[in-house]
Image (tube, rainbow, N blue to C red; front, top):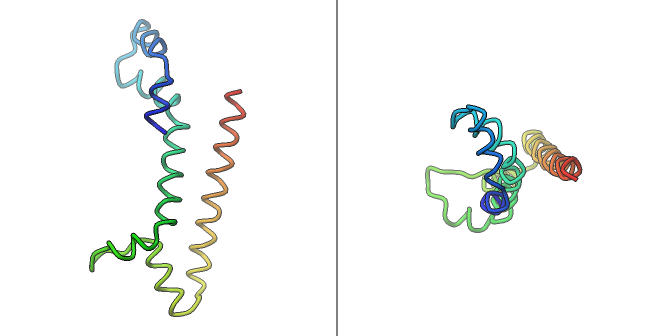
Length: 111
């Protein structure tokens, strides 16, 4: 998503910022990053959903010292559903709803 956003972005915004004596960091922070932000959020959302979806891959490929969130939740559910699992599920649900709502709001504002 970030690469697609970069391909669709015009370089004239960055050129205009540099014509107005903005350095490279300020141009990136004030011009490029806000234009890339929807792509960054989309990439984060895709990575988050993919990590939850690929439980089997995470389960079989994780090493002995590492534990991913899906594997941790699965292990904790096997021992019994605790308030900790309910809290993690609620936080994940709230984060997912916020990301979808933010994406929807940004899309609406762009139109």
